[in-house]
Image 1: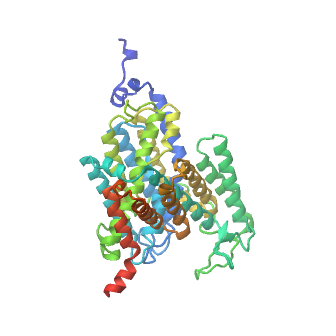
Image 2: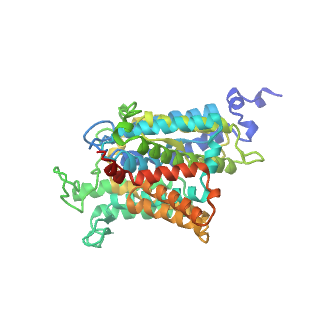
Length: 488
C-alpha cells in the first residue's frame, strides 16, 4: 500500500474510510448540521431566559432577563456534549438544548409557586442521572416498552401544539380577547409593524422549508430580525411594556427592541453555569410533585432520543440487522450525560437533535462530523451579544414551524381505536389548553388506564403505568388532599 493511500490517524480513529466517507465530507456534514440547528442559540434564551420563575427571578438569578448569558451557556454546553458524542461514541449526532423540554421547564416547572430556576435546573440534573442509571443497568429499554408507542407520539404532538401557541401569543399574533379567551391580534385584527415582521418571518420560513432549503429556520430568524431592525430604525416603536410592567403600546415590540449592538463579538458570559440546586425542589413543591416532574422530563427526553438515534442511523445506513446503531450503549451514555450537563449549565436538558440528519445528508457518517459541529458551537459562544437584537416577533416563527414538525407525527395514532385515541386526544389538547405539559401527560395516562379497566383489559397495563397513573391522580388531587388533611 502506498503512502498516499494509507489512512491517517484521524481517519483510523473515526473509521472514516471504513464507513465509506471522507474527511472532507465529515467537515461539510458537521458544518451543515451546525447551521441547521444554530437557531437554538437564539431560541433557547427567548424561551427560558425571558420567563420568571415562581419567585419572580430570571435565569441566572437576576431580576431581569440576561439573554446573552443564556445564549453563551447554550452554545457552550452544546459544543462540549456534541464533541463528547463524536469522540466517545463516534456517531454523527449533535446535541443541544431540547425544544419542548425547555418549554416544559419554563412554563411547567420553573413557574410553579415557590420554585426557582436553580431548583428547576436541579430537576434536570436529577433526570439526566436517572437516565444514565437506566442506561448502565439496561433498564432504559424496559421503561421504553412500558409506555405505549402511540402515547409517546401523543406527548410529542401535544408539546408541538403547546410551543405553537406559546409562539403565537408571544408574537402578539394571538392575544387575550375581550369576551373570548383568545383572539386574532388586537380586537380580532392584525395590527402593528411587529406583527408584520412575524408574518413575514413565518411565511419565509415555511416557503424555504417547502423548497427544501437547509437552515430554513435560522435563515427565517436572521431575515426577520434584519427587517425588525429596519422597522425600528424608521418607526421608533420601542417596547410594548412600560417601566411599570403595564402595556404601554400594544403595537410595539414584545420583548427585545431590535437595534444593532455596540459590539458583535465579546467575551462570553458563562454566569448560568453551576446555577442549579439539586434538592431545592423537594422543599419547594414536595416529593410527589418532584417525582412526577422528573418522570415527565424523563419521558420527553427518553423517547425523543431513541427515535432520533435510530432515524439518523437509518439515514446514514449505519444500523445493524436488528436496527441498532453501532456503539449504542456509548451513544445513550453520552446523551444521558448531556441531559445532566444541560441542567448543571443552567440551560435546560441537552438532547439529540434530528437536525443531525442534515449533516448525514451531506455525507457525514462518523463522529468527526460531530467534532466539527461541536467546535462551531464553542466558537459561537463569542457571538452571544447578537441575541439581544432578536425580538419575539422574529424568533417565534421558529416555534410555530417546530410545532408543525412535531404535529406531523399525529398520523402514527390509530384514531379508530378509542382505547388509545381518547387518551392521546386528551394528552394533545390539554397541553395547549391548560398551558401545562404535565397536565396533558397526566390526563392521558389516567384515561388510558381507566379505559383499559373499563374494557376488562387491566392486565394489558404495564406495572410502571399503574404507578405513574396513581402518582398523577395524587398530583391532580394534591390541593383537596392537603385541605382534607389540614396541611398548609
